[in-house]
Length: 249
Image (cartoon, rainbow, N blue to C red; front, side):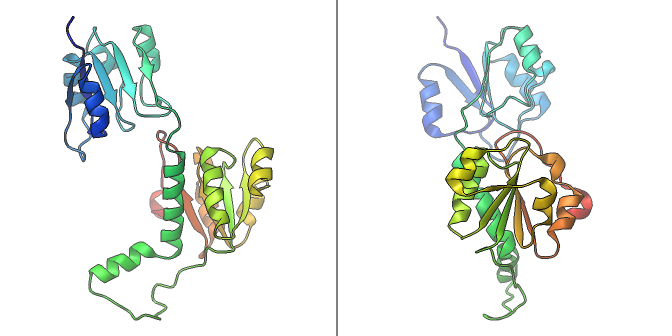
């Protein structure tokens, strides 16, 4: 029996590739900065039995139909939102996803974003690289405190929100959250307070976050409520889309 042929759309962990090579012939796009185009995906699917795709790949009906012998689509996403599952199902092609293994990593990055914005880390780095040093006690890059402030979690109560909340407790932050479904377990475990969204937006000195899929709340109302000293950080699991309005970017 011939070995299956697998195409991986971007480099993944070396250990994963080695495991695949033990059971299949593996080809992959070796450029970590290049996302395969539609045409490249079509060409790859035509000559392989299994497509191993990442979260940014758009696997539509045309890609799936490019090879009548396609045996599987393996996604590194938690949800197959950019894969035409209906078309794959119609062709009896299994689609696999990964378990929610990136919760802690996402929460780490979320806190990094919050701290970087509040303390103007990126701006400071840019100035130093340009040879500009305004002085050790200059107010030129004065940021805002994070310790002791209010952290408003929009869409809070999920895995990522809880992980962010655990980290925020280390900064002595007060935790409030707004979500369609109340989470008594999170309130008891993490000391989070459930509030209506309008009250969360009205809270002062907050660091509002959007760690779940609440795109509709991350709009002009939220940015306006944040004011001059508020910080808005948005994060989510792999998948889904995020939009920043041009005038707010």
